[in-house]
Length: 458
Image 1 (cartoon, one colour):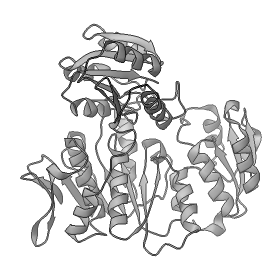
Image 2 (cartoon, rainbow, N blue to C red; image 1 turned 90 degrees about the horizontal axis):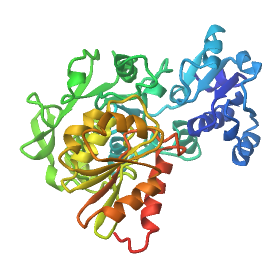
Image 3 (cartoon, rainbow, N blue to C red; image 1 turned 60 degrees about the vertical axis):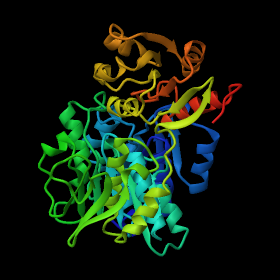
Image 4 (cartoon, rainbow, N blue to C red; image 1 turned 30 degrees about the horizontal axis):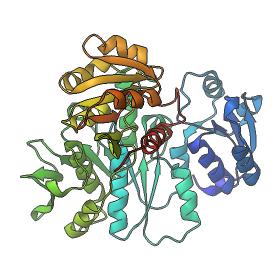
């Protein structure tokens, strides 16, 4: 679709969070008649009202009016599930529904590298973005990573990039409503249980993730984690596949061999960087780095540029982020861990005795999966948020758990009872929406609480 097909169209944007506001701005830029319709009246504020005025959009908060059903098409926020009443009414009327990622891609003329998976997406897209910038590309990073894809596209339209590339983190929710989305490179990192509060089955969630490749059977490059057992069981149909691997005996196009990250070229093995000098720790980050290498192989051929980019990469906020220590208890913010598999990875990154903060908005996970790691390492599990009771029921008989309601209370309890050399880890394995707007707000709150305490240091 080009701009001419959007100009003058009546478009409703459902929701008013980050991606919805970006979609409204982008659609208005291309001449659409935009209505922002938000059911939650509490989301209305002066800042959003000013945005609506600036772009000439109509808005409604606290209800969905009949005007929604007069739209030519609808952009739906990723947080709105398929089974709500307004979505059913829109579909019954035959009005097309698209995600913000789908709509934004209509207007992107540069290559797109899109990354999905249950865990590791944010680190991987940031690493891809950094590798491309190091190699001289005008890389634009957006999507589920904190800045909406539509916002970074608008940014690019106000600039004059010479070598533009868009790096997009895409969630299953964003992929649920794509139609023509077709990245030049599509990367899938792994498949582990998540969002079981949203999908009818685990397989439905996995199929949503694999929807990234629905338009890539004959074009583009599909990048797959050869170590992931769930991906290994699935036949991903694509003419152009590329694999990355840390452990697989079959290796990959980007792989770890004898402690060295490297790539396979037609001429043979090409080493890039010893794994021990990668600046972000953990086996999971070796996998993320190899995924990033595999994703940019179409754009960066020189191994020395790849090595330079990897060695200068810095850890992503909210992902096992060291935020300080008090009384020699080291504190880590892993607020990005919104599912159980991600929290497992975080726990495995430490050998010290641990105080673990778990909880938030439950997503239907099985917390007993954490027991093998926690039984040998954790001093206490500090439970917060709406999911505290559910988690306590599942693991409370096997571990020392304590319901503390808030992150503030959990931090206070740890510092009252912890010992020098311990680790305090916020790795909630839950969504943040019970007490915070998003995982970033939760992580920022944790960091601020630690660094506001007397005696903290890095």
